[in-house]
Length: 542
Ligand code: AMP
Image (cartoon, rainbow, N blue to C red; front, side, top):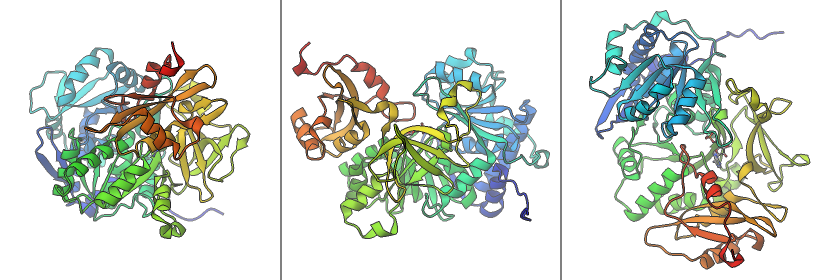
């Protein structure tokens, strides 16, 4: 017997309707390139979204066409987040930190029809414009100095009517948005999010044991809107009616701290490097900023060192919440909160639990597979994490050669090596390709990195394999010291020796000014691996 419930479609336009009718006066604040603050509301955004959707249609964008954005986090980008799906098209966010050739490849592979670009990013656009076949280019923030080929965003909106009725309700399984993976293995691959996936993802991340998002919150996504939908925060903000603060291109710790204070931000989200920078600023200038409104700093995208979580808590009274996800998962997968039994554990145990990547969001199923099949949830046995759920990719866009990322029974193979404990909380040990195989045993680079970043003199550490005649591979630690601090390899080795077996200890330390970064702000270990691939530790001779 079938249930007798309405077949209500879970769509992006439904989220927008809610924001407009219930939260129309809630603010959207943007930091402009010249640092001034621009203020609008969900109500005004919704009206402009309809105009933009109509304008896109007038430019020839048809249902199913891809509309690309090359933009920082700001109100027009937010408007496009809703307008492209409202027009039946697919929002395609482009990562502005990618090399021009990769951008051109992605734009062509996706078949983007229209492109929105920030005026400040026009030099980047100039480098790709002859390589791509986009029909219409719309420039945001230009003040009218444009050529025939480039359309001004504001002029376009002014010229479009508010054709609300012209847009049929999309099917919830239609594509609404698209994002390419950063392509650490092979070419970037496109992930196509359905309306339904984005809506269910919004519901899940807003839950109290998720990111705990409420109407009275003020959200500041530092995570770029061009990377995995800013972790779904723009859509979730519309759903719950939160105020949004968008930092534009100003992502330095000082600019962020000023915004947190001035706008009384309650929840913010970003990758560990952002929080490491903020921590250094707060340590150097304690008391300069009033951050008492902040109730959660959500961290993900790369492993959050336990020492960092502790430092924010102990020194600044700021609560870091650790989450894990992937572009292929819209992107939220797991999040770490203390289960009832752990709340009363010792501080050390609680920090350890919070430094894990945590338990899956509702409707995300997890399992891990080792050489001998699925591994037990004993907190120790490692395996590759496999996931499934309503916001997990079932395939990549037009990439027939990527079938190996999916199991025969339809789970997605994440490429992350984890141990799962009895409560279902995962700990990411490494990317499968970053594990170091020494004497036939695995050494987890991420675990070593996090431990090193707990040393008082260490700002950043990345661990990569170097060849070793006897053991196959041994770890090399690339270390960036904090300004004015010193540490010798011997001191760092002694520090690690307190927690790790001898064979895990790095064979060499290299002190660098900076760890290379990927376009998503993560450590670019492929560059370090390449750089040190023929490395010989000093004591091995030439
Ligand atoms: P992306 O698709 O660019 O967001 O990258 C996803 C990958 O980032 C995952 O497969 C993990 O390897 C890594 N990642 C994301 N969040 C975390 C986390 N909290 N801890 C460790 N690694 C993470």
